[in-house]
Amino acid sequence: MPNSGLGLSVSATLVPILVGTLVTVISAWAPARRAGQVEPVEAMRSNEAASPQPLVACTIIWLVMIGAGIATAGWAVAWEEGTTGNRTILVGVGTLLVIIGFFLAGPAL
Image 1 (cartoon, rainbow, N blue to C red):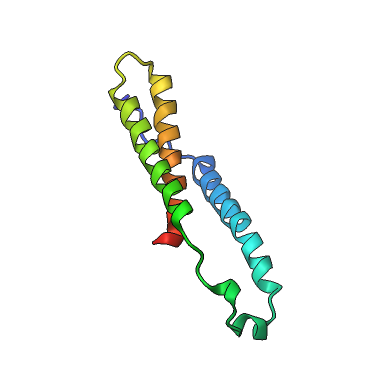
Image 2: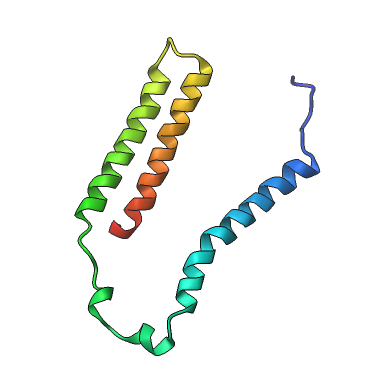
């Protein structure tokens, strides 16, 4: 293994770049279309719809998700009898829960 060298190929370089670009464009598509449908004068008006909504429920959800993600990943690391595959899946699920929790925490922060 030490003499195997660096496994860098064109596909190993281009695929992540293309997938990252595609995911970014797809995730920005809906908000950009919504923003494009709002008239400029309407966007400048102040109304009740723009007032901040209570974030209690969202805060509870993201706190639970982050806590569950950390607990799941910690359990996977401490699980000595588990196979590597099962532990890897649990760490992945825990990481996903933490990422979604931080995504939901965005408006509250």
